[in-house]
Length: 236
Image (cartoon, rainbow, N blue to C red; front, side):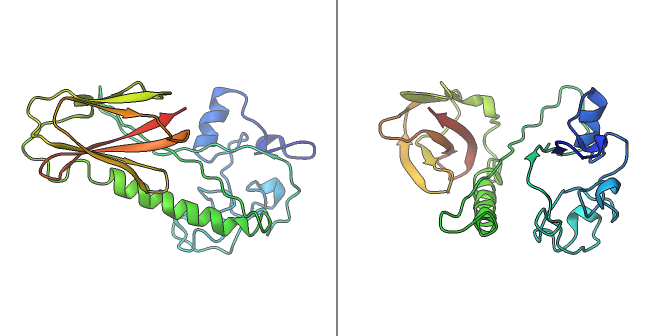
């Protein structure tokens, strides 16, 4: 979204519910699809193919966002856009849910800065941060159920409270079938392991101590090395 004088009304902030829904689908307020190039709208040079992503730069060489049709680099820089107040909406799907179904999603918004460069050189740092975030997500969440054959565990069997926390948080193992010891690991956002311990009981306390404020991940591993669950915790 480009907010400010001189922009087409169809590219401004959503107002009614259908505007929000259309933006989630990549459709402007005048019911036209986002187009590759310009500002994504036909009034501002958006005359290419329909696209799912605005200003991908060189991050989509295979054309995932344009139906497999490879495109030239498209960014705010190549279009020489005037800096202004930018807004954006992220979405995923569409999904089909059965009655009572639940789907959990984690969305990350990355930020990076090159202290010795400018906004352009910071892009490479942002791309590196994106790659690392994907690696951490793959490592922590890709194999929840791998190797778990003797348990019928669900996430509510292992809970963390309080979360977010200030002084401590407790991990509860509410399942008598769990074979001990249970391994608990705490990771930082960059994938570094901060804490690793074994638990014989039904509760494990993580004290804040010198843990900086931020987001961390707890991984719970069974005695047979199966990853039972991974949970996000926030230290204030």
